[in-house]
Picture 1 (cartoon, rainbow, N blue to C red):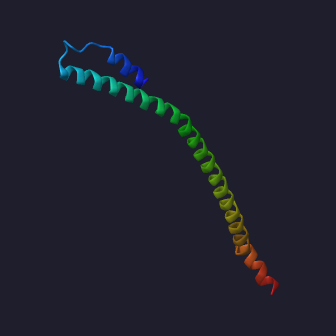
Picture 2: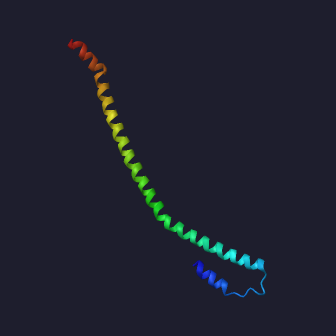
Picture 3: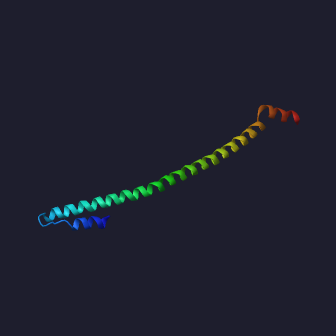
Length: 97
């Protein structure tokens, strides 16, 4: 693309155009080329970004599932401990001794 622009640019007769205009036109062509190249690179990276977002969602989901499982285990342990210290359980222990 860049070489095509330079070729097209080289074919123009700048005899009647001032040097500043020549430089301006060349700079504009070069900027357009670089902008388009940057846009293409961004499009290529878009799929990578989407894939990384999906991986992050999977990781968050699995971490959340692990944390919920741990919480459920702790809640079960708490219930078992609370059963041992409930008034009925304590009364039963006292009567058993």
